[in-house]
Image (cartoon, rainbow, N blue to C red; front, side, top):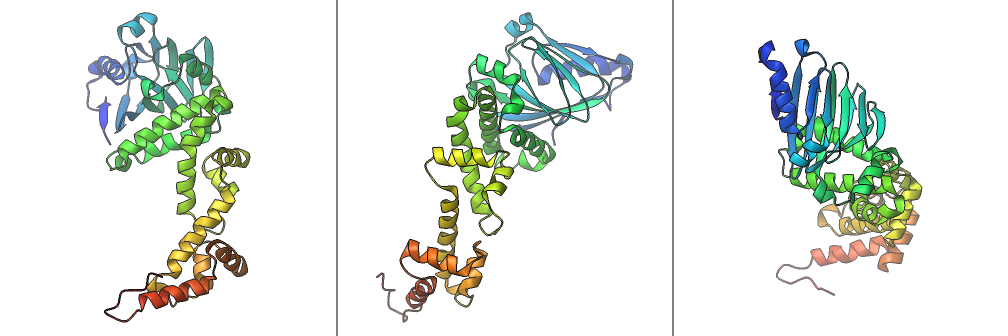
Length: 328
């Protein structure tokens, strides 16, 4: 954990100025007003994920105002996607005032004027991503800010920010930190594009989601309960959206799952250290619940039965010493 600021060790007379300075340093030029200067308390943490970062602030009530002059003097390089923890924030931007409740996403465009307030003690988690890397027109970002719940990725982004914060001590220091940052940028781009218009986002959704779906399937191949419903739920989308994504990539999800399971079963049947394990057991290890269905599909794909495939490989691996296995 990287704690960048805390009032805990400061004298009461120093806390107001130090808190305002810390807020400015971690964001962009803005006007900071503290609700109760006599009782101000704050703590700020930052974790870096490549080009993205998570900023968590826990503090007493405050108000942030960003003006056109402050934007011109210090343009914001980041977009902020925030989630409140057990508190409610009030945001005014793009001519619209809204309340951000716990477990709701709030978009803040740091290159547009805004007025944000948090009453009482509260905390928020904020994912910062480079606006240039997101690469969306300003009009798309502005419109999407009012439509975030319409995106099929809404829940996925909430869960992503939660994981990056709760497990930050491990994730931000591991080898995957940079990749998690790139994933964060992709998620925000697709969140905003799909909130703006689902057809506008179709290409980026397919590009971003399908690799995640494929990886999820491979991790859960052995689970007989793996189904389109389970896959869709794990990715925060409907089954209809899942099938449309697969259709756009020109492949059948269910047939691909069967093919992946058959491929894994073929590899296990060929392994010398598994020759004593019954074919039916291996089929179940690979997610098949029906022996005859497994045998039929195996023969259809590979042209011979699972048992025959195993016998061929057993003979190959037990060739007499000094002879090379017959490749045919």
